[in-house]
Length: 145
Image (cartoon, rainbow, N blue to C red; front, side, top):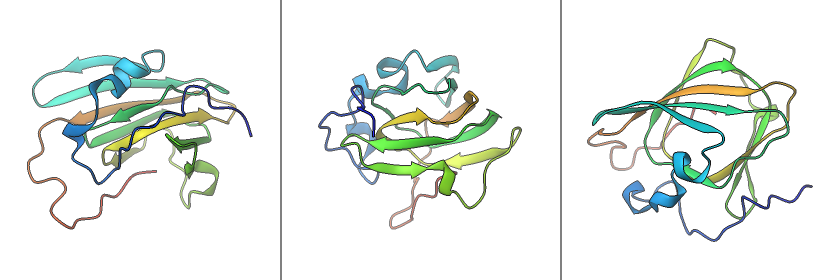
């Protein structure tokens, strides 16, 4: 196991929590700017270019908006929560996204991501900023991965 020096931080954030309560300083563009670039933003959407080279670990950050993800290049990764618990290990996914595919993701609470593969993990994320009623009360948020 490696030390996630940029990942461990007490946050008390949960995915089922109101994302407006998540601190702005953990927003991906602020907390992990070396891996997230803003391509476009208006009152409805925010478009991010996320690129994580092999072996790199993102700083602890959040994605408070649901989003459509477009895969430019794929690499295996492990997503950790703020306590370094494994949330997702892409090697265990039942279906691996292919280059050119699109996925849906709900908001993501505080996490770090380590690219454990041989390629860049490169994704365009179209975040939906104003989506009234999402998720519907009692609705389980489904993530693309």
